[in-house]
Image 1 (spheres, rainbow over the protein chains, first blue to last red):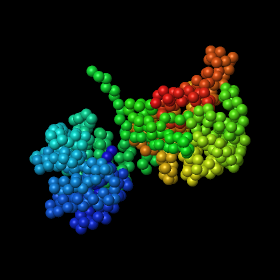
Image 2 (image 1 turned 60 degrees about the vertical axis):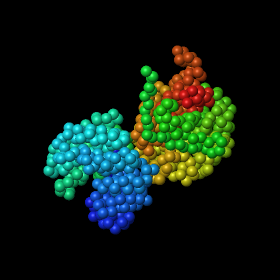
Image 3 (image 1 turned 180 degrees about the vertical axis):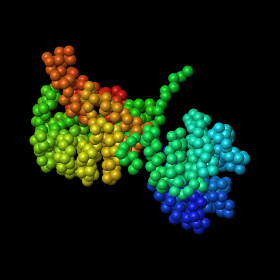
Image 4 (image 1 turned 45 degrees about the horizontal axis):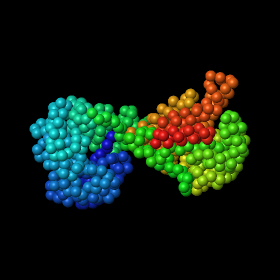
Length: 262
Length: 312
C-alpha cells in the first residue's frame, strides 16, 4: 500500500500561514513526521496560488526535500506552479506525482506535464458536467483518460486512477460505487491499473468524532478490493494500524506479534 | 515460436553478512532470487559449509564419524585444524561441555577453548552454546569477549535469552545467530525484537531450526520457503537475513546413520548410507535457501559443496 501523506495542505491554517510567509519550518516538521510514520510520498498542496504559484511551489518542493528523501505528490490546479514543482523536484528518490488530472479539458495540460517530465499522475474519474453516477460511469471516464494518457506518452503504470470519493453523509450510495470502481479499474489493463483515493472526503460533513471511524473502515474495504495507494494522514495511528492489519490479513505482509511496529 | 521463459520479478534482496577476516573471510547472502534460479536474479555469494567441532570428545557420536575424524578429535584445536584442512569453509565450535547435564564447564573454560580454536584457524568461526538457554547467556558472553575482533557468528539466541546474547555480539563485534522453532512468524518476531533493542538486522543470521531427512525435514523446508518468499517477493526487511541450517547434529542422531548393516540388511552399507543421509539432507536445505550449513562428516560436506558448485 502506497501512502501519500496529506498533512501539508493549504486547507490547514498552519500550512496556509506558512505558505503565505514562506516559513519553511511548519512544512518541514510535517514532512519529517509523515515520513517517519511511514508515508511513501509527501503531498504538497498549495491550492490555486494564483498570484505567486510557480515561486511558491518551487520553494515548497525545495524546503521539503531538504528534510526528507521521499518523492512528492504535487497538488495545485495552477499549471505553471505544477511545472515549477516538477522542475524543482529531486527525482533521485523517485518520480513525483501530479495531483491531479481528470477528464475535464482544463486539466489536460497536467497530462502533458506528466508526459514531458516522466511524472506519475493521479487521474480523477471526473468528466465534463456532473459527477459520475456509478462505477460503470467511472470506468468509461477512466478509459478515456487512459487513452489520452497514452497520447501524451504516459506509461499506464504511471497513472493512478482515482474513483472520486464523495461524502457519505449526502450521497450514501456513492461510497459503494467508488469501492466497485476500484475493483473494476484494475481490470482495465494487464498489469492492473494503480488506484488511489483521497480518503477523508468520504466523511466530509460527518460529526468530528465519527469521521476517523468512517475513514479507516472505508480504507479497509477499499484495500480489500485492491486499492494500491491512498492519500491519508499517516500520523493517525489507528488509520496506519488498520492499513497494516488489512495488508497482513490479505497475506501481503507476514504476521509477527509486533507487526504493528513495523 | 521461440520459447519465452517466464520470470518472477523480485523486489527484495538478502543481506550480505560477512564472517571472519582476511583472505578466508566469507560473505553470506546477497541473493536477489529464490535459490539457484540464476536466470531470475544474482547470487554473488555461494552457500558455505561449516564443519562442526565440539569442546568435548565426541564420545556419543556414531562410529562412522569417529572413524572419519580419527585422532583429530582429541582436542578442539586439532579438530578445528583438521576441518580447515579437509575443505570446511568455516568451523562451528559447539560448546556442548558447558551444558549442566554434561561436563558443566564454566564460561571461562569455554571462552579459553573458543579463543584457542579461533587462534588456530584462519577460516571463520561459529560459536554455539550447548542449547541450554540460561547457561548459554554466560557461556556466549565469555566466549564472545574472548574472540573479540574475529568477526564470529555466535548463538543461538532464542526467545528466552536473546537480549543478553545479542548484547554480547554487539559489544564484541560479532554476528548473531537467532533461532526460532520451526515457525515463520516467530522467526520474524525474534528479528523484530532484536532490531527494537538496537541490534542491526543486517548482522543477524536466521536459524529456522533444522531436522534430518525423514524426521520432519519438510517442515524446515516449508518454513524456509516462506521466509524467502517474504524476503524476496514481499520485500520484508525482517526476513532478509541469511539462513543457517545446523543439520549435522540432527542427521547423526537418526537410525539411518547408526544402524549397522547386520541389523538392517535391506538398508545397505552403513557408511555409504550415513554419508548419503547427511549429503541429501544438505542438498534439500540448500534448495530451500540455506546460506550456511553446519555438517559433521567431511566427505558429506564435500558432496554438499559439489552440489553447490553444480547448481551455481
